[in-house]
Amino acid sequence: MRWSGGAIALAVGLLLAQGALAVGTESDTSGNPEYDAAKALIDAERFEEAIPRLRAAVLADPDSADVFNLLGFAHRKTGKWDDALAFYKRALAIEPKHVGANEYLGELYLEQGKVELAEERLDVLLTACGRCEEYKELAELIEQYRAVN
Figure 1 (spheres, rainbow, N blue to C red):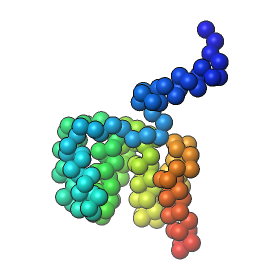
Figure 2 (cartoon, helix red, strand yellow; figure 1 turned 60 degrees about the vertical axis):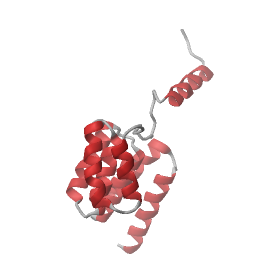
Figure 3 (cartoon, rainbow, N blue to C red; figure 1 turned 45 degrees about the vertical axis):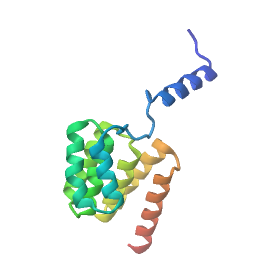
Figure 4 (cartoon, rainbow, N blue to C red; figure 1 turned 90 degrees about the horizontal axis):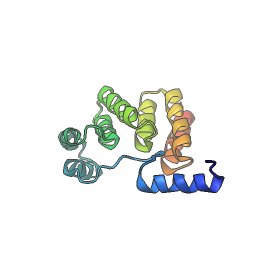
């Protein structure tokens, strides 16, 4: 059976809509109250308090790139860069094109003065989501970093 271009586009669209094919998306964390509570704490910039909730969220959903991404974020915001790096890498092992983890890992690399590694994350974001908001934010931070350093 030979598929036309329109039929392929329709099939890909249906798979994306059903969540069966992920392209630069975040994983589904719905129904995880620990994740929701941790996200609220992070939104309130209570990063240290969010960490135990996120650890509990991992127990409920050990394959959630979103949970590992937020663990990385919370650890980065509390200055625990080694832990943050490990959590971001775990999120990307689960979902290599995870938009948030790629952006935040790029930000961590900038904080460490590793601009070339941040630019690698920017390249991944361009592939994952085009010139999405996360791409633009990281690109701007890299530009600012280069202007100062």
